[in-house]
Length: 183
Image (tube, rainbow, N blue to C red; front, side):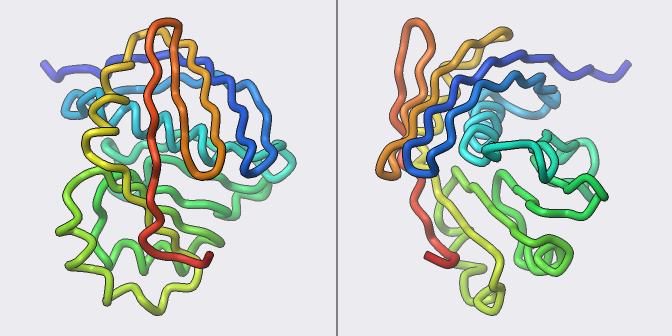
């Protein structure tokens, strides 16, 4: 019998002072059986960091990345189904990044593992114009993973590139570093 996904529910209160986005959002996140809490919480953080200020161009949604290799971790499609933003979490290869950059207006990758991945692909994606690559320090992603609970109420504050994620008991500072993409 196959192991089923674990369902997490989160309410995120976002105060993004850098983008001037202030929203409350609810999310239901399915944790794949092979996914740890660290990756789950990085996906939730990425969701908060990329929430659009309105839903006029379509909502940001969790996709089936670990269940379906043709889907990212998150995506935003406009109301006609056109891909606006493709978001990967982890360390995709350069072929995947280049393929999806041709199909989407914007591609973002959030890595939280060793940087050896980046040094192996950095020269191979240099011609991509619509790709942003971000790195989250491993120690920070581990601390973020410790916040995982089946039901979460999180406050996410973004100011000057620093992200503060807190629940009722703890707070974690995460500072994603941009490795590649337009400034």
